[in-house]
Length: 227
Image 1 (cartoon, helix red, strand yellow):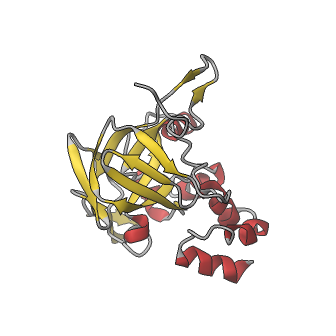
Image 2 (cartoon, helix red, strand yellow):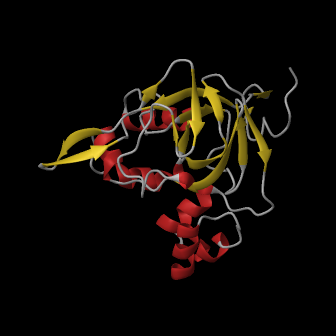
């Protein structure tokens, strides 16, 4: 099967010079659970694990998945969260233990796709569904709970590997092994990585975020307030 350049974007193995097709390595879901944190009970949907077979993505979710806080971690603009297997492997080296797919609360674990370099408004076809990149992940204390390290959210922010939130542009069924095809890339150069850097590290980049018309209303308001 031949592969389009958009499927293979930023997916070259420099040691072998072989193009790697971008694919979903796992679809991960989880229900809301209660956990103890610093003497109080909190609810979270960050504990996700791979699911077998195909699942439907529609509305604000994937079947079988849920979020405890849809203001900050869900809703139409953050229906799914994608994180790269390459980044999970990098983190495994950093923390000194093997981290499994779903560890970061991601619904889609990908391989061969430059998730940090994805443009705001970029569209991915996976299975018969289409997803649009909307924003980077801004870590909260619940990521620290999942990794067993209260300081991990700060480490995550500094690492510059935020992953990408997605909205469901066209509902459909998805599953592990599905090819990821980048169907559309906007003409601006505002990536999820740049948005994350503007938020965490470099406010001089804030004005640049406004060049992306697909930037969500919440992010646009933040950028206008901080430029």
